[in-house]
Length: 319
Image 1: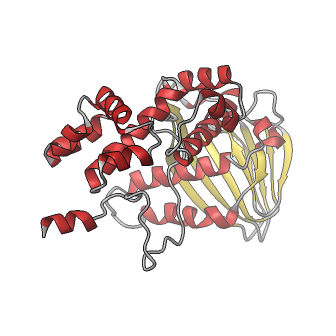
Image 2 (image 1 turned 30 degrees about the vertical axis):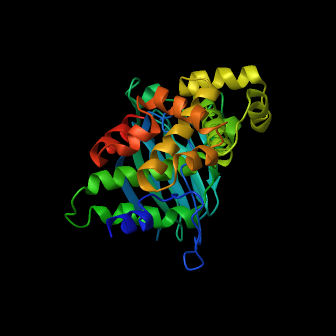
């Protein structure tokens, strides 16, 4: 009976690799597309939120911002002056105001908008003023851009409701929702308007996302550096340099380590024979697979499978 349970148990989202049943249909599927080693240290922290409805004309005199402020127009137009430059925002547009910006607003009846204030901090830099989202030569009017209002409005409403009740971890939830909003909206700012550091982060992320997709799609194949570079649409030297800079290892070693990580999961969660795992992961033969597995994990596949579940879990974490 225990053996039967082990044969039929599935405790990982993708294992066994070839498992299919007519009664088990995956309606939609998504996986993490960026390497676990790549982390952006930049984080927004929630400060305040207003949902504004204007019923009579009102003027907010010029004031300097000490934090970031995001204006999201639900019903426009929204008229203001930013650093003495006149700006008019139509419905479904945003304006990202930076610390130090001078802001003056003319509100008119019928106008609706959201205001989200947040700090933006990086572990090493710390304060807002050291972080530049936009290109320094950018005109203030170009800090405005079109927003995906249907996508972000429910998130704004969630931010608003967190402080209405004494809910546990409300501040942490607000920070997480603010972070989601920030990165969602950053993707809608034309890339040429962003500061070089943000453009680099964007390019690095796209490279890693594509590299991870190539690695996952070809996990059952043996990829030469030439073939991998062609799939990535870069030169071999560029591929090697970017992998070294972003992942801290060569592309070949990263792919090989990924295969062994996958093998660890297969050996832990299925009854697939070692030679089947070796074949499914594109190794030349089971002997080659065993040598590589032992080199990276410290145990042969047979020793790993014979070890206790606790040891398996520790070994899987270590790899």
